[in-house]
Image 1 (cartoon, rainbow, N blue to C red):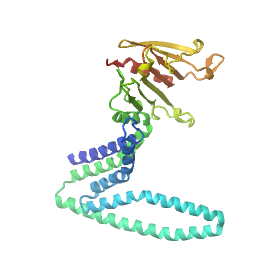
Image 2 (spheres, rainbow, N blue to C red):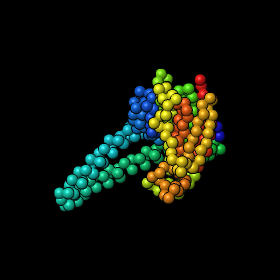
Image 3 (tube, helix red, strand yellow):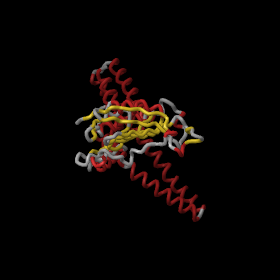
Image 4 (cartoon, rainbow, N blue to C red):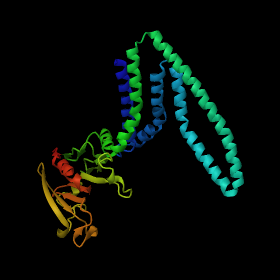
Length: 343
């Protein structure tokens, strides 16, 4: 049973590691000069890491017999996927060009490709089947010679069956809860959430996309997206033209704006204001105005009350904003309440 737990834990750890790496690719950090290089290297590494999971399964299922050779073959096939894809695109372009010239030549070319592809596929499948039988025979003999009990073999078979589902389940979970998964992964990239003179605690499930802090001019900001995954409500994602993601930002203006009205801190018309909320961040008052833009109102009423537009300003340099789904507003306000003044 101990070996079975190790198998499941190893596959689960590999899947989790892959998820964090893949999500880190879509979370660039402009504050670090090597961020783009890291993204490129991480993306290229998937040509080895994704087939690497197949190599791990090969070792678990068939045992140590010629495992290194099998692993190298699997990695080579995985790395060849990109050239193979480029080749398929090239073949498709050739077929498209031929079809525009002559249908007869296109039929001849398709017949020639089929005559070569079908026998090659039959040969590969037959070879793999024979190889699978040989590996299974070696594994069966190795287990009997090692004195493994029937109970241990049953536990191992169960662990293999369960672990084979883990990659698909992990992809499904990330797909159903993509905003939350992306948000957690972005917090690994942006470990510190510090503004000039302030510290922000961004909710763990909120996505951080950009962050910058320049201590000398005093300019700093942190911004990103917030959303709820498809697992909570599928209907919210049925409108392809309206992705249910909210945008947010918190920052400080440069010291030159202190005591002045910064361009971002404009006030909406009184008739468009829905609500107002005041905060005290250390010694700094922060006022948040929930309003509706004039161009989105009909006869003085908002067209869609489920969308919130919030602009926060202070007599100092601190500011914040939120645009998106209204049910996220309490979380946004809680984040503002958690801001601490560092000096």
